Length: 429
Image 1 (tube, rainbow, N blue to C red):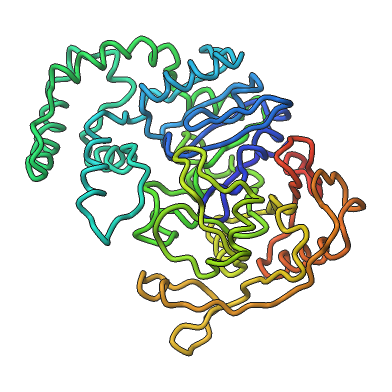
Image 2 (cartoon, rainbow, N blue to C red; image 1 turned 90 degrees about the vertical axis):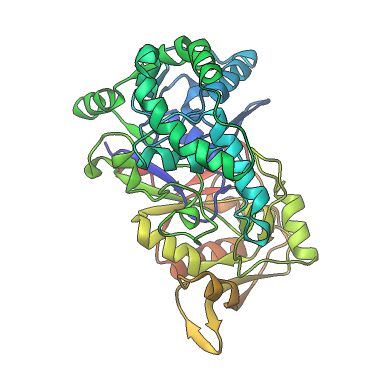
C-alpha cells in the first residue's frame, strides 16, 4: 500500500490537521519533516479540540509519531505541548513519540534574535512568529547548532558553544544586547535534557524499518508551498522547504517513499502576516469569509487575510511539489454567496501572465484576472457524499480541478473528522 505525503498548497492554514487526523487512523506512522512550533494544527475529535504546534497530528490517536531531522525543535515548547495534551487525556510516551537525535534545537537566544530583527526591520518586516525558527535554521546550515544528541554530552559542549557564541554575541552586541549567558544556557539544557532524550531515536532507522515491513507512513508537512524558502513569495516565507520533496531529506527516507502527495487547499485563499496576496478582499465578502471560516492563526491568534481562490498559485504549488491530488477544505464557507470569483491569470503592467513572478516588486504589482461562477444557496456543511452537495458546488469543484490541472481526492465540509467526501483514496494508490 502507498505512503502519503500531506502538504499545504497555499500559504498554510489550509486545514491539514483535520486531514492528517482523518488519514492517521489508517497509518502506522505519522512523521513531521520540516518546520517547528510555528506551525499550528487544530484537531476536532468529538467534543474535544486539540491545538498542536510541534507534535505530529497522529499523536492524539496513539499512532506512532515521529519528529524528523528536518524539524527545528524547541525543547521547552515540546515539554509544554506534551503537558497540555496530557491534561486533555493524551498519554505521550517513547512508545508513541520519537524525535530524531539529529534535530537542531531552538534556544532562548534564537527567539531573542528573531524578535530583535523584526522590531528593527521597519517596513521590511517579514511577519515571523518570533519563535526562533529562522535563526535556528541559520545555525544548522552554519554548522554551529546544538542538536538533540548533544543533550547527552553536555560536558563536552564547550567547542560548540565557542562557535555558537562567537556568532551570536556579535549579533547581540549590534542590537545593544549582552552576550549569551553560557552558564545559564547550560543549566537550562541540563534541566530539560532528560525529558527530551527519552524520546530521542535514530528515526531514519525506525522509518526505514517501517518501510521494509510494508507499514503505511504518513508524512506531515507544515505551513504551505507558497511559504517555501525557494518556491514561495520570497522574502515573505518560512525558513525551510515546505514542498513534498523535503519529506525524504527531513526524515532519512529516500524520495521513493513519498507515495501519494496530497495537497491541502482551501476553497478560497488566506494568508497570515506580510507579503503579496493578489486576490485579497478588503470588503464585506473578505470579512464574511474570515468570520465564517474562523480565520485566526492557531499559533499566533493573528487574523488571517482572506480572498478568492487563486488557481494560478495553486497550479504552481501542485507543479513544484508533484501533487497527486488535492483535498479541498472549507467548502461550506462559500455557502450562500450568489457569485464566486476564481483567479485564472494575472496582468503585470499590461502583460498577461499565467504564473506568479519571482521578484517581490512584480508579485506586489500583479492584478488578478477573474472568472465568475454561480454560487449556491444550499448548505454543504457536513456533506459526506457527492449526492449531498448542491449542483453548483460540484461545478465549482470541477472547475477548480480544471484550472489547477490536478484532481480532487478529498472534499472537507466541516472541521469534524467524518465530514469528508472521499473521491480517491490516497492510501490505496
